[in-house]
Image (spheres, rainbow, N blue to C red):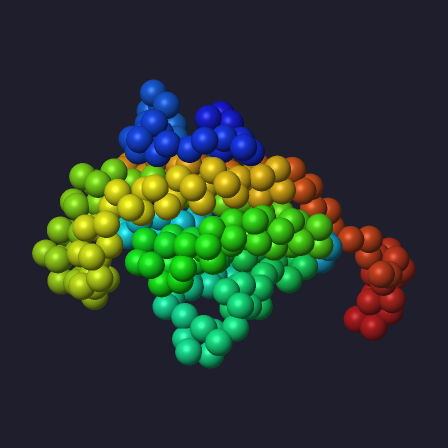
Length: 272
């Protein structure tokens, strides 16, 4: 799977209307799902080595419009990973205490520890998305945040964190289908919020905000990927491929044992 077609090169101008929401690469679903299963198994094994090595970490940022599949993606891609080595943080509306501090304070506290994978379900990018669209701070403040975000991510990268950022690109039509399912399926009613209507009514404003955020903040240290999200099976395959490729590029290795295994075996035999 060629991931370069989904990666936003640094300095690129992003027009989301030019990016497909339903591009299956001409691939057959059975083959793609088989590859996804392989990826999930590989991610689990690579995370085990990352945790054992305890030198580097991975941050996966997921952003999307409502109903694009963030929760589903996290559940399927990371479901087989040992919970000791992966954490998920969902960023909701800031608390009064968080609002009393700089906008990155609540985010930096959840940066991944060495050996860990951290997944952000929404992230610091909300401060140039919802904040911008709803006019929660003056324009000069949110515009300054693009460079602050780039510096923050460069700091994490310098400290040994590999960062990948994924925008799940869902169409307005597909979003409507999924919102309708939330309203008509009793097992999904709990997921629907009245605010979903307001967010959908500002679709175009959000698209412009995402275009600027992705274009201004896709860097070599922390690239953005725009992933077609209308087809679940294809979305999962691409995201899992991105995560697997990232871990493979890190190449974590098991550390050298602190004891001589053969000597330990001989000693064990003496006490059995």
